[in-house]
Image (cartoon, rainbow, N blue to C red):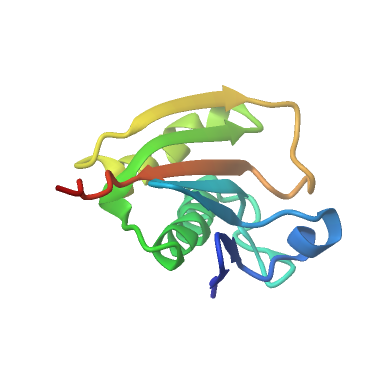
Amino acid sequence: MAHRTGSRVFSGGLWEERYGYARAVVAGPWVLVSGCTAAVDGEVLHIGDAYKQTLTAFGVALDAVVQAGLARHDVVRIRYYVVDDEHYDKVGRAHAELFGQIRPACTGVRVAGLIDPRMLVEVEVEAYREQARRE
């Protein structure tokens, strides 16, 4: 479960502390979420299943968005990184289930690998909520 400290959100993930980054940063009306995978509590979940890994990774990312004070419908941009072409349809299906009605901008990229070879996909999420105008 993510928690917020000032303008930073932390999920307690292994690499956040080790490599010195936050799960998400709140910058004005923006919430910028770092790359998320299916690693939860130091364990990679759903080995070999790109669809379930994608749902898990988006779950981690969306938890950070909520902790930062925004919601899924505030997501405006997604990037996903996939390690093998055969996984694109599975990743796309998971993406459509979560964001098909929202239709954020989205980029999918094939990469040579991720930090752990059991990880099949990594996602980045950006959310935006226009601040109320002051009269």
